Image 1 (spheres, helix red, strand yellow):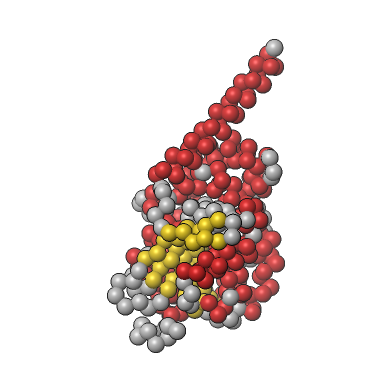
Image 2 (cartoon, rainbow, N blue to C red):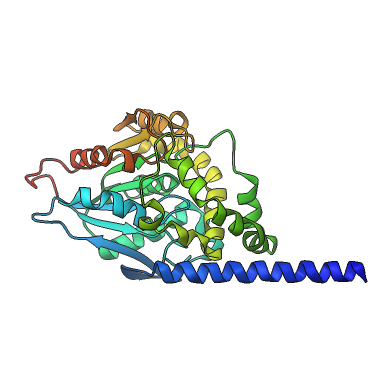
Length: 321
């Protein structure tokens, strides 16, 4: 009888936690509804927001976010600084308000690169500068390799480009397992993530302080929806093997690459990633920011804008075609 009662209590507790996870996801969805437009693709839609230039346009800049994030962080931080450009910020498949499209297969950065370019071929057929943060470095370098004719240049912000010695954290692998993954996400990972949002923000900004209002303006709590959280873990788990296979191709890059990174980035190693691709890309250069962690676009947005301006060319507009 005691064992039966304990099992019943455990089941009730698990059901309560799962309902709590779903309720939390619904709550944050109401707090941060979609503010942009959608582009239809096979399997669903991608969400994006667009800012028009103030005055004469100097070209188009596309912003792609990394892990545990969505379009809003880069747009809120860099959008105002890029006022002389058309700015497009996308939610990667399965994040923010974009559908996952191909399901778990969309974790592959190559699939994400193809989906994003299908969207951009519709909404931005002109050439553009691609700005990518963190995990999006993997898919953005694939775009630069496979579709160089569409890019004026690539700006990486603490971008993931190479395999790293520590591999993938165990909990990201566990969250991707069939059957067990959804249970682990709802029963363990989401409650823990909800409690550790502030601590997580501090770790990516360290050694600097977190930008005031970051969690709100970046709409970071959208990650607390179960499907988003699981997609995030799937993406992280898939990236290691992807960049290991892709890295030997970086000497084929035909576009300018600016790798901007903080010298104190403890999330994505400046040496393993940014310095390496800046060395391997024929038109690569490294921009190292002293005393900055994993959020260079918060610490020095003017440096990001300068890198974009240099790729576009003279502001007369003569180099925009």
